[in-house]
Each structure stands twice: as structure tokens, then as C-alpha cells.
Length: 424
Ligand SMILES: Nc1nc2c(ncn2[C@@H]2O[C@H](COP(=O)(O)OP(=O)(O)O)[C@@H](O)[C@H]2O)c(=O)[nH]1
Ligand SMILES: [Mg+2]
Image (tube, rainbow, N blue to C red; front, side, top):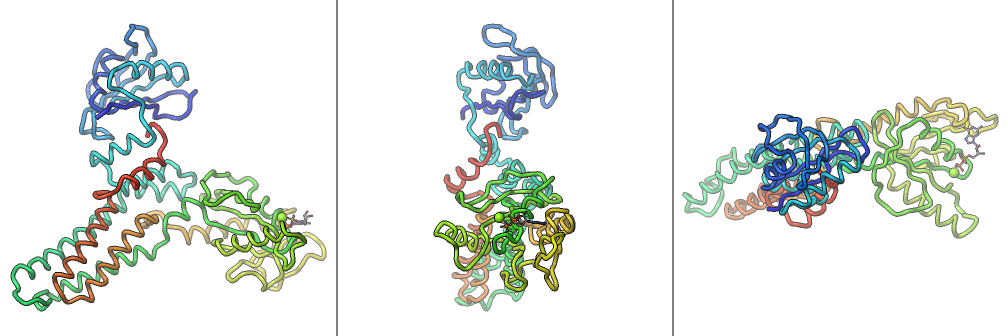
């Protein structure tokens, strides 16, 4: 196992820089630079020097011997002055030690996973926590990083093992090849577990939380969509969440409103006949965005918007504006009337549709595996051959194992740990 090092704190210059070294050579690196190994888990002040005896910095060092470190290996932390040249000099001193090399993105977390310090679901939560930009994202991520999902899956797995044991007992002792020997409690236990899995699949999934709740502004040209778009963005913290999809002539702005992540979408006006081909393409894309949106704000003629859209009576300050009979909101992007209450309502509505803090929220990878397990268990409930049931329970258990990363392929791991930055 190689020993790796990397800057784990933010971009320099900064007040402090933290470089972590993990692997079998971490103790050697401490001795080489600080001249000593401090007592475990104690911050100790030390002058750091390179192998020519040149002083590099005056800092703090910490020693976390294996296995009680975040990676499960020997780990040393160096807290330095956060200047670029300080960091460069200390990194050069590490690179000069045989067996040490710079870490790749996510490599610390990957080692923590490989050494059983965290499971895959916790690592996914950690990745979400590092990219969280809104309060709602942070709260959901800290729950899964803290093992909320892992504990749930462990519980399911235990229940499954209990059911499997009952099947095995029948297979061992029963001559008859049917389920006559299975206690009624087996099937009720199976039903409860299957129901529990299905209930977790019915909860909101975690991706919309990452990308933001998609709100599209729709209506004919000059309805006031772009003005409203800007009014909604004003004074709000822009967030930089990655939005799936290519560049297009619709404007997508990630924004946090009252701590809830949104993607606001402004687009071409809808009309039957575009004046030219380019506009027609824009309209085509607008229709696609409307279909994809979680919510549409409709600024067009009352009743003609897509189903479920909120009727907006826009430009209410303007004399002769299009009056609606029962708008959800009457507002003006110019005077600001009605904007605050629209924002409040949007945040409440989206928070209700996104995973709630403390609730289980599965991502696509996790959903797929929970569905596999749920399907296997559901068909086990319809089966009478104990051999077949045993196999279905085994398949369900494999899905749980994959969920926690006990069995996972390299490409799954590469994709996940590639989401981390260097130094994490
Ligand atoms: N008085 C007033 N004018 C508005 C308001 N919203 C938009 N407008 C005007 O209406 C025209 C079209 O607005 P715009 O937002 O570009 O419409 P879009 O084509 O739907 O994006 C522009 O001249 C705006 O200045 C509003 O709330 N009050
Ligand atoms: Mg516009």
C-alpha cells in the first residue's frame, strides 16, 4: 500500500492549510519533517524542515495511528500557514520521501471505504455533504453520511437473514418439497419486509435535492416571464449545482430560496406558429422543459396552461394587463408586489416534494437495488417451493450487500469516488 499526501483544506492563500498523509509511511513522514511522532490525537507544535535541514514552516502536527483514523491507516495531519509557497515546499518535502506520492481525487475516502471505516451509502452521503449548497441539501446529506440509510439496510438485511434461517431449517429437516413446514410467521415477516422496502421506494428520491426543484416559467411572448425570472433571482443566493443536460436556449439558474434548492427555467414564449425555424426550435425545447419541470408557473391565458400549473396574473401594476379570474398569484415584477409571497409558497411547496430532513432518500443506484430486493421478496411471497424461495431471498440479500458496497464493481467505485476532490 502506497502512502499518499494531499492538501485537504481549501484553495490557498488561506489562514491555515491542512495536509494529510495516510498509509504505512505516514509515521516516517512525521519524523522526517517534524523530527518526532507526537502522542496520538494531540495537536503538537513543531518546526517542519526538509531533508536538507531547511526550515519550511512552524505548524501543528497530529498523529492518528491505525486503525483509529479516518482512513483506517496510519495518518498524520500537518497544519501549516496557508500560503502557496509554504504548501508547495512542504509538498515537495513529502514527494522527496521514497514511497510517498500525491493523492488522487477521493482517494482518502476510498481507503476509508476499503478499510471498512465507512460503507458505500455513507460515502455517497459524504459526497453529497461536500457538494451541499443549501440547508435542505446539508441536512439530508449529513443524515446519510451519518449512516441513516446504512442502518436501515442493515436492519432489512438482518430480517432477511432471519427469514432465510427459517427456510434453511425447512430444507434441512423436511422431506416434503413444499412450504407446509414453514410457520405462518415466515410469510407475515416476508410481507412486512416487502412493504417496508416498497414504502422506502415511494419516498422522494435524492436526485431532485441535488439538482434543485425545477420551476419553469411559461406563457406566450411578452407575458413577463423573463422579468419575473429576474425578480425571483434577485437577492437570492445563486448556487452552482450541476444541472444535467446540454447548453440550450433556455436559461436555467440554480438558486436557493429559503434554504430550498431550485432550478428556475426561463424560456422561449409559446405560440402556435413561430416566426422562423430558430424560434420554432426554441418553442420545441420550451415544451420539453415544461414536461420535465416539477412545477410550471403559467403566465398565459387563464386555463390554457399545462395541467397542474400555477396561474400567475403578471404585470398587475400595468393598466390594461390581462386580468385572471382566480389566479394563484397576482404580481408585478416591476413593483415587486406579490413576489415575496410567491417565493414563500414556492419554498414550502418544493420542500414538501423533496426529501424531508430525517427521511430516507434513495439515489438512483440505491433505488435500483432496493427495487431488485423488493421484487425478489414479492415473488418469494407467491412461491411455494422452498428451494426457489431460498434463492429469491439470497438474491435480495445480494442486492443489500451491493447497496452497502460489500460487493461492488470497480466502475461503481470509480464513479462515486471521482465525485470527490483531491484531499478528500
Ligand atoms: N409594468 C410592467 N411591465 C412588465 C412587467 N413584466 C414585464 N413587463 C414588460 O413586458 C415586456 C415583456 O416582458 P418580458 O419579461 O420580456 O416577457 P417574456 O417575453 O414573457 O419574457 C417588457 O417590455 C417588460 O418591461 C411588470 O410586472 N410590470
Ligand atoms: Mg423572455
